[in-house]
Length: 263
Image (cartoon, rainbow, N blue to C red):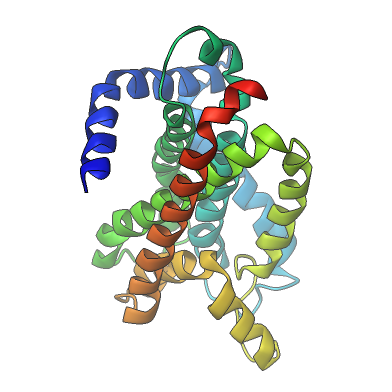
């Protein structure tokens, strides 16, 4: 308990640094870009249009308002991909600074995930445009979406800590994780609907062993169906998030003192 208080106190002590790192990441992402932060809306919107054109005829014919169905899942996966990939390189990428001054190493990883979350929140403007353009009904349940985003944010922080410390000692993890992300995307019902076309074992595998299913299922319930998520996916999402955070923090804290020898 004392250790937890110390970690929270340290985080508040360096909150200004965290804010500066997040702001820096956002500025660097759109540096020398004419449209700037508009790309946070435009990029997912253009991606959604391309995917809709490609997959509507292949997988989306039976899905009503396929663009909203696709976007409500894809935006969460894009956040997972961007945040964890950037977090993985956060410690190694700030090696020169870590050698010169003392800064809590987890700040850099946390900043990467947080900046990607801010970018995703900005991209919700694209979701609004898609819903208006397709005549989708706006459900009041959409105001509960921040709960899902918070769950996924906690999960990505945990996974980011785990990947960041692994990347310090094993640089090949970057290439392995790229393959994992591709497989993870197709293993998650983002572009398709998990229905009777798939065998029972596949349903069990996705619902039982794919963390992203819990967050995307909640997102679609709130945005697409206008339902309150069931207790299994809601509480399961929180449980998976905090378990991943505990694993990530434990692995990061256990190895952080050795980072300076390898970066």
